[in-house]
Image (cartoon, rainbow, N blue to C red; front, side, top):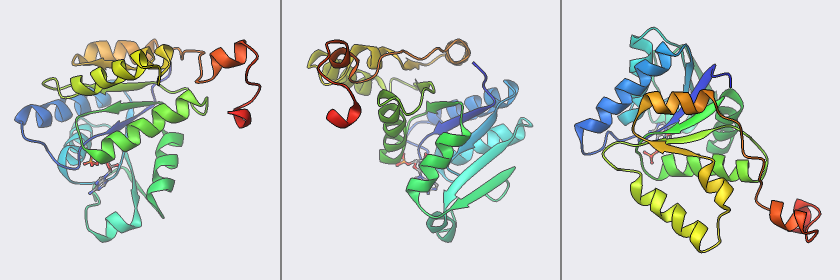
Length: 204
Ligand code: AMP
């Protein structure tokens, strides 16, 4: 698939290990080398600032999408190719979704998980078919993958949705997966629809 823009969600903190910063820097320069533009939350803090600076240093383009509140708190990055200031966190998420061909999560906190899980949730409702990947550093995402396996085992998550995301540490493998991505045709209610138990989402 075409990869003109890649959205990176990541910590507004740098985390406890230098490996996190190293990984953010490597991902940023790799995005530029791949000829893609970075879409991200527009901050100059934590891993967010590191990945944005790395793309710019490597000669790439960076589009930041930031709510006015965070500009007022003076955490906006002032050196981006383009900074879009929006009215709310909700508008920001929608705008980042519109602008991006793919979503990659580096380690982060609530904000990172919120953004990534919203993309995964929209996708399982058939609202978007864009690839979602967790780029791991020092096993940070492993407990989350285990949690997702538990969701499948306990039948809260469709197995197709679980396997329709990428998790790993290797950026070469990540970009190969992104470029070859074709979305699973399953959505959350496919089995029920097949069995004739559900005709539309409104019936859910
Ligand atoms: P967290 O993982 O909780 O550190 O939150 C990081 C994510 O939430 C980023 O991907 C941003 O989109 C958003 N975010 C949180 N804090 C900030 C901030 N200070 N500036 C810009 N975006 C932020």
